[in-house]
Image (cartoon, rainbow over all chains, first blue to last red; front, top):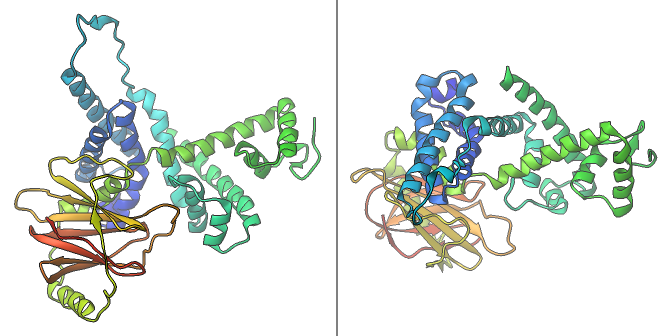
Length: 180
Length: 221
């Protein structure tokens, strides 16, 4: 946070990488289309950047991102519902509100942020290996990873097991910290 | 309870074997051995459930990530919101022109604009315009942002491999040319992306150097 406030572009990118999935995920949970989700994403990212001087404390940041994204998504989803043509003689009392609450999303958001933070704390080689195996839209095979890292294919599985084990340890600490 | 073999240690399945099990990377015999053990061992069953959750959480990260162009845009916010002073344009232009004149761009392939959008569907919205160019081995996906009527625009682009090609040629310069004059130059990053953060209105074309040199038709910014 302090580095972001000091104008460090790399710190902003790191901060953003922790929250971008949550900021994208929540409008999708509201059933918003890609275009609307992009609108929410942009609004929240800008609000986050502009709000940094007021936020200052990293501790409350996940909560702030969650509630801000939730509010933006909820408002846009309501607007879209108002704009949608209604069926004939609707009985609105029978239509349940399917919007997720902040409480519904809280655990998932905390986990997502903690995973990103934990990956940041891994050794760079471990982080890269896990990224290639799990985080890519089109994950690489063991053979491709072995080629990329210039290691025998048979060592990829045990290495990724060690990296995941380390990730679990860090993640548990992150999650314990976020519930304090 | 089955407890012998390379996947077991001290009466329990090793973490590495459990991981292979939840990711379904074991052969049928090993898979069955572990399955039988899990039926009787609460500790290993709970461990397997934790590992499965971790792997699923990681995979969900890729599934739920924002589209690359949006993530790239967000990374640029500090520059867009608080633009810095202009870089040394004269030197930049001189360097670029020297490269162009030096024949670095020999054997150029023209990129053809295509009406079909590949990958993430990005709608045209107020303040943004998207262009996609195709050149056989790769596509060039480009977005032009218009922050305000009189503000400089920004151009963000990504070179996307086509078909089975996985490797991006990241060792590649991107030249922005206005009319016949070199305007700015940047370099593809490790994701194959590039950004020109401050571009004045006008007609431009882009040229990529590197292993697959290519040039776009001109486009309006």
